[in-house]
Amino acid sequence: MTPGDDGPARAPSACGRPPLQYHASTMAVLPRISLVTPSLNQRRYIGETIESVLSQDYPDLEYRIQDGGSTDGTLDVLRRYAARVPTVSETDRGQADAINRGLRRVSGEVLGYLNSDDFLLPGALRAVAEVFATAPETVLVFGRARYVDEAGRPVGGHVTRPDAFTRLAQACFVAQPATFWRRQVWLEVGELDETLHHAMDYDYWLRVAARYGPGRVRYLDRELAAVRLHADAKSVRAWSGALEEILAVVRRRTGFVSLWWLVAKWDSRLDGRHQATMPHRVPWRAYPLALYEFFRGNPPRRWRQGLGGAWDGFVRSRRA
Image (cartoon, rainbow, N blue to C red; front, side, top):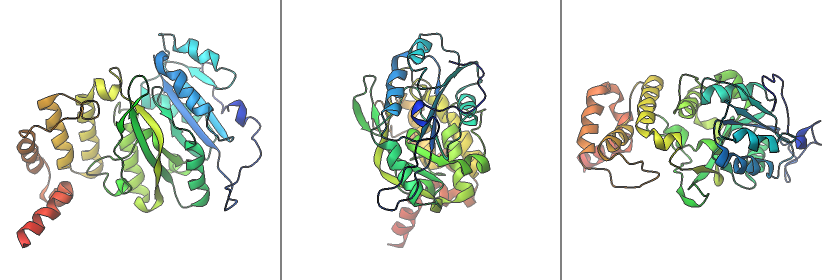
């Protein structure tokens, strides 16, 4: 591990750049993929995360760990991979800062990040690379993901949709570890917002959609990654705080907060459980409270967009 290393570094499989790889049918050159894992006190899971990356059938890979100064034995795990995975361990200002620091040090054409408790599924990187290689106008690729428990056992599917980037103002149906983007996006849209601690990925997708539109985004209909749900996961442990940040991000980027997100807010306040870890019926009281906040807090010109499909259904019922 190297504190304060400032230059790009590659896993040995990518050292000296391997021979060019080509798409089997089109002979398009497959791009170099650079992946960063931000880490802080994830000794229990980070080994599986690293193995899931190193075992990918993709030779032109640049992978590095950006650790925030772990004290739980994570660094001992990382030392076992020192010859294959460059690691920097230094104090940072949070997850988004760590990701930005890592991505500044890489050189790939395609970028992404994988949290230290999540993992990639076999063949994910090659599948993503083939899309980028054969669709040069595409700036971002996202696919499906599964939820797993602490032991890595599947417990359900992460909700994703092919039309997610046309619906980002209403809800987020994008799985972060199954999402990759071109370096062009990093240069033109900018880095992750380091003031955010929960919704930095959602905020980034909104910024990408605003700049390029959904037409330059491609959905890959296969599972690419696993999202681990456990008691210490930030999205589980601090879900109510995450929701508040999500609502603030959505309002800042779109000018309104959708009914979908407000129902999620009141579901959380009234029930307290996370829908991903403990699926449950939304309390009926959440709906009038969400509707009241929706109409009170959003400008009328945004009502139709904020209600989404519910508005169209209401109009059809009135015409019937």
